Length: 149
Image (tube, rainbow, N blue to C red; front, top):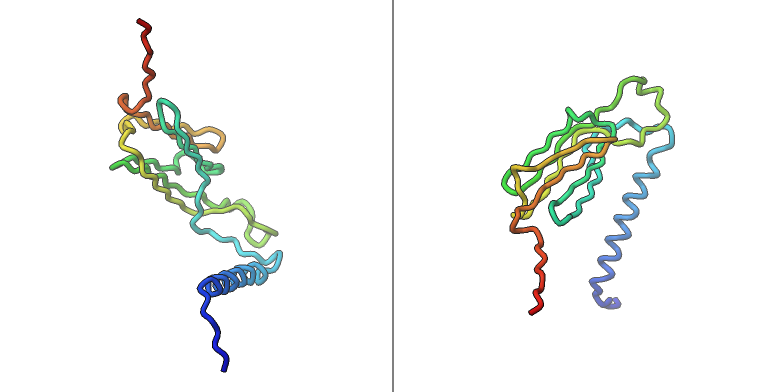
Protein backbone atom coordinates (compact mmCIF):
# COMPACT_ATOMS: atom_id res chain seq x y z
CA UNK A 1 0.00 0.00 0.00
CA UNK A 2 1.44 3.32 -1.09
CA UNK A 3 1.24 6.40 1.11
CA UNK A 4 -0.19 9.52 -0.47
CA UNK A 5 0.91 12.88 0.82
CA UNK A 6 -2.02 15.04 2.00
CA UNK A 7 -2.47 18.22 -0.01
CA UNK A 8 -5.13 20.63 1.34
CA UNK A 9 -5.36 22.42 -2.03
CA UNK A 10 -6.29 19.16 -3.76
CA UNK A 11 -9.25 18.88 -1.36
CA UNK A 12 -10.39 22.40 -2.25
CA UNK A 13 -10.01 21.74 -5.98
CA UNK A 14 -11.99 18.53 -5.60
CA UNK A 15 -14.78 20.35 -3.76
CA UNK A 16 -14.87 23.04 -6.45
CA UNK A 17 -15.11 20.38 -9.19
CA UNK A 18 -18.01 18.69 -7.41
CA UNK A 19 -19.84 22.03 -6.98
CA UNK A 20 -19.34 22.87 -10.67
CA UNK A 21 -20.74 19.48 -11.68
CA UNK A 22 -23.71 19.94 -9.35
CA UNK A 23 -24.67 23.28 -10.90
CA UNK A 24 -24.04 22.18 -14.49
CA UNK A 25 -26.25 19.11 -13.90
CA UNK A 26 -29.10 21.34 -12.72
CA UNK A 27 -28.91 23.40 -15.90
CA UNK A 28 -28.83 20.29 -18.11
CA UNK A 29 -31.78 18.64 -16.37
CA UNK A 30 -34.18 21.46 -17.32
CA UNK A 31 -35.03 20.87 -20.99
CA UNK A 32 -35.80 23.85 -23.22
CA UNK A 33 -39.49 24.59 -23.32
CA UNK A 34 -40.37 22.78 -20.10
CA UNK A 35 -39.29 25.45 -17.64
CA UNK A 36 -41.63 26.20 -14.80
CA UNK A 37 -42.84 29.66 -13.97
CA UNK A 38 -41.19 30.35 -10.65
CA UNK A 39 -41.96 33.00 -8.12
CA UNK A 40 -39.22 33.29 -5.58
CA UNK A 41 -36.98 35.77 -3.92
CA UNK A 42 -35.00 37.98 -6.23
CA UNK A 43 -32.61 40.81 -5.54
CA UNK A 44 -32.84 44.05 -7.53
CA UNK A 45 -29.56 45.56 -8.72
CA UNK A 46 -28.40 48.55 -6.67
CA UNK A 47 -25.77 51.24 -7.27
CA UNK A 48 -24.55 53.33 -4.32
CA UNK A 49 -22.36 56.38 -4.69
CA UNK A 50 -21.36 59.40 -2.63
CA UNK A 51 -21.33 63.10 -3.44
CA UNK A 52 -20.10 65.99 -1.29
CA UNK A 53 -23.62 66.50 0.09
CA UNK A 54 -25.22 63.04 0.15
CA UNK A 55 -25.08 59.30 -0.31
CA UNK A 56 -27.23 58.19 -3.25
CA UNK A 57 -28.70 54.73 -3.78
CA UNK A 58 -30.23 53.76 -7.14
CA UNK A 59 -32.24 50.54 -7.37
CA UNK A 60 -33.49 48.94 -10.59
CA UNK A 61 -37.17 48.15 -9.93
CA UNK A 62 -38.75 47.98 -13.38
CA UNK A 63 -42.23 46.55 -13.52
CA UNK A 64 -43.04 47.40 -9.89
CA UNK A 65 -45.60 50.12 -9.13
CA UNK A 66 -44.41 52.66 -6.56
CA UNK A 67 -47.23 51.58 -4.24
CA UNK A 68 -45.53 48.17 -3.93
CA UNK A 69 -42.21 49.66 -2.74
CA UNK A 70 -41.51 50.19 0.97
CA UNK A 71 -38.56 52.26 2.24
CA UNK A 72 -37.62 52.58 5.91
CA UNK A 73 -34.68 54.26 7.66
CA UNK A 74 -34.22 53.19 11.27
CA UNK A 75 -31.18 52.82 13.54
CA UNK A 76 -28.67 53.60 10.76
CA UNK A 77 -30.22 50.94 8.49
CA UNK A 78 -31.99 51.59 5.20
CA UNK A 79 -34.47 48.83 4.38
CA UNK A 80 -35.91 48.44 0.90
CA UNK A 81 -38.82 45.99 0.40
CA UNK A 82 -41.24 45.24 -2.38
CA UNK A 83 -42.86 42.68 -4.60
CA UNK A 84 -42.83 42.14 -8.34
CA UNK A 85 -45.99 40.25 -9.22
CA UNK A 86 -46.34 37.88 -12.15
CA UNK A 87 -48.82 39.27 -14.68
CA UNK A 88 -51.65 36.83 -15.32
CA UNK A 89 -52.64 38.31 -18.70
CA UNK A 90 -51.49 35.16 -20.50
CA UNK A 91 -52.15 31.60 -19.37
CA UNK A 92 -49.11 29.83 -17.90
CA UNK A 93 -49.32 27.00 -20.44
CA UNK A 94 -49.03 29.50 -23.31
CA UNK A 95 -45.56 30.67 -22.23
CA UNK A 96 -42.55 29.26 -24.05
CA UNK A 97 -39.96 30.85 -21.79
CA UNK A 98 -39.98 32.96 -18.61
CA UNK A 99 -36.65 34.59 -17.77
CA UNK A 100 -37.70 37.63 -15.75
CA UNK A 101 -37.71 37.25 -11.97
CA UNK A 102 -40.81 37.67 -9.83
CA UNK A 103 -41.57 37.62 -6.15
CA UNK A 104 -40.85 39.64 -3.06
CA UNK A 105 -37.52 41.14 -2.11
CA UNK A 106 -35.91 42.82 0.86
CA UNK A 107 -32.53 44.54 1.08
CA UNK A 108 -30.97 46.26 4.06
CA UNK A 109 -28.02 48.67 3.96
CA UNK A 110 -26.06 49.89 6.97
CA UNK A 111 -25.70 53.66 6.88
CA UNK A 112 -22.82 55.67 8.29
CA UNK A 113 -23.57 57.91 11.25
CA UNK A 114 -23.07 60.96 9.02
CA UNK A 115 -26.52 60.67 7.36
CA UNK A 116 -29.47 62.92 8.26
CA UNK A 117 -32.03 60.15 8.65
CA UNK A 118 -34.96 62.56 8.94
CA UNK A 119 -34.25 64.19 5.54
CA UNK A 120 -34.10 61.14 3.27
CA UNK A 121 -35.76 61.67 -0.14
CA UNK A 122 -36.89 59.12 -2.73
CA UNK A 123 -37.77 59.52 -6.43
CA UNK A 124 -39.13 56.84 -8.75
CA UNK A 125 -38.86 57.32 -12.51
CA UNK A 126 -38.64 54.88 -15.44
CA UNK A 127 -38.26 51.87 -13.14
CA UNK A 128 -35.33 53.39 -11.21
CA UNK A 129 -35.74 54.23 -7.54
CA UNK A 130 -33.32 56.93 -6.38
CA UNK A 131 -32.89 57.42 -2.64
CA UNK A 132 -30.89 60.47 -1.51
CA UNK A 133 -29.45 60.38 2.00
CA UNK A 134 -28.17 63.88 2.90
CA UNK A 135 -25.03 64.15 5.03
CA UNK A 136 -24.79 66.08 8.28
CA UNK A 137 -23.15 69.50 7.95
CA UNK A 138 -20.06 68.48 9.95
CA UNK A 139 -19.56 65.44 7.66
CA UNK A 140 -19.37 67.52 4.49
CA UNK A 141 -15.85 68.25 3.30
CA UNK A 142 -14.78 71.84 3.82
CA UNK A 143 -12.15 73.57 1.76
CA UNK A 144 -9.77 75.76 3.75
CA UNK A 145 -8.43 78.81 1.99
CA UNK A 146 -4.83 79.76 2.56
CA UNK A 147 -4.22 83.38 3.33
CA UNK A 148 -1.12 85.06 1.99
CA UNK A 149 0.57 87.39 4.44
